[in-house]
Amino acid sequence: MKLSFLGLPDHPKARVALIPVPFELTTTWLKGTKEAPFEILKVSAQLEFFDEETRSSPQEDLGFYTYPLEEFPLNVHKALEKIEDLTHRALKEKFFPILVGGEHTITYGAVKALKAYYPDLKVLHLDAHLDFRKTYLEDEFNHATVLRKIYELSIPTLSVGIRAISKEEFEEAEFLGLSIIYSYEIYNSFERVLKKIEEFLKEGSIYLTLDMDVLDPSLAPGVGTPEPGGLLWFQILEILKRVSQAKIVGLDIVETRPISGYPFTEFLAAKIIYKFSAYLTVYNKWIKKSES
Ligand SMILES: [Mn+2]
Image (cartoon, rainbow, N blue to C red):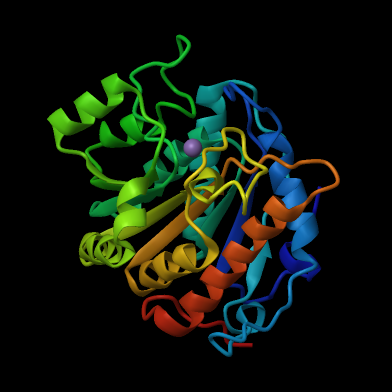
């Protein structure tokens, strides 16, 4: 099925590609992330195309291409292979890939593909949860273990916004020296947190994985595992601004769970993609502008 970002035809010289990944298999609490790519694309037609903050129009300056919305195999290994292939394809076609999930597990497929292109890949992980369990409900690959799987690829990570973590995860993360910024630290001093993020972004190729539950549920209630005490709108924008200035090579936005009759979380996800693209347009020196 062909749906496109902003409801516009694909730009002939698009620089940014949206990859819908309606994969959901291992969600444990509130289900429905499978519907998110469709709903996010659908509601994206309601966005205003001009960004007043940057004075830019990313749909003209960068241009968007949307891959077809396809079914994903209900087998985690097969699904991850497909995600890896799609990401490879987008990179080969010289797109900046944005994966629209789906559950958090999908990040692993994208990261594997990007690591082959960028050996200096690092992952900035925005999430309420550390997702660093060894196994979760017998499963090695699922939404609660994805950061561990990335760590096992020897990829440096920085997790931001964490506020729900098991004692085992906490102790192991401490032991391994994992970089984590907890939610209470954001509350204590957002300035200090931004400096830490800037430090992380200074070197390497950056992949951003944005779990929508990093945001406060007052802002983004439509997620599988809501947790109070999350990021607010202007805080996430400050982070995205800094990410856009780094050598960012791809991102995903995962774990949106549409609530029937209340499409605000989907709209927020679409708006985040659009705002980030506006920042890429004006702040990023690596991404090429489209020519027409
Ligand atoms: Mn999460």
